[in-house]
Amino acid sequence: MTKTRKALALALLLTVGGMAQAQTCQDTSFEGVGYTVCDVPAGADLRLWLTAPDGRPVGSFERLRELAAAEGREVVFAMNAGMYHADRSAVGLHIENGETQSGAVTGGGGGNFGLLPNGIFCIQPGSFAVLETKAFLANPPACTHATQSGPMLVIGGELHPRFLVDSDSTYIRNGVGVSADGQTARFALSQGAVNFHSFGRFFRDVLDTPEALYLDGSISRIYAPELGRDQGGRPMGPIVGLLAPTD
Image 1 (cartoon, helix red, strand yellow):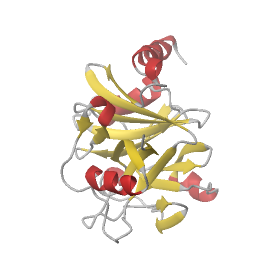
Image 2 (image 1 turned 45 degrees about the horizontal axis):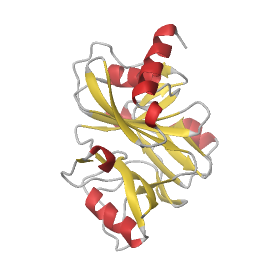
Image 3 (image 1 turned 90 degrees about the vertical axis):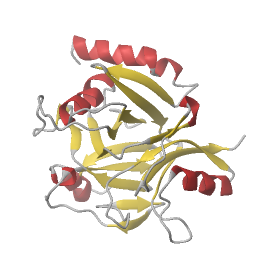
């Protein structure tokens, strides 16, 4: 890691990691843009949701809280977790509780999902992974939950090769990166519009995640009650969330 990257990582450690044991989510900034970062340790009750037991899409943080409450649990944090079709079905691979609900998509195409390589975020019982889709399919890990999205933001410590530093395509964006040891999943939501190059550098240089995946943009939002944040809005497709027992 360069001195600059070390300094950036240390700055975030002081503003975010210093209270990691007390809080899941913290606000920080990078290059004049605010970010909300939520860190989840391996083994925590992190899950993906798409369809509720009644067959309807979960679709909202409010519905997710109702489902969690029915289990005697509460939502610590949640955010949208990947792209979806008009009927809110997942675009690409979606696994819940070890069951594959839709298969992986390997081809290109339009939009950000088709900006290859795209990738898959995988939750395992004792670790996390972000893998390029073809690498994932070549040797599929045993994911309890997984979502496919794209593009990859960081690949082996390098930015996606098609990102442009001066791109004028800017949106509020969210994504997920995984620490080098696979023991921490780091979710981030920009509070202002950023391009892919800046967003990828935040994951690489500040969050220090050698693999990171874009989840979505413009519709990106978060539920973080410890920060007083409940960003509702139009219905969502896949949702990722961290649960804990209700006190």
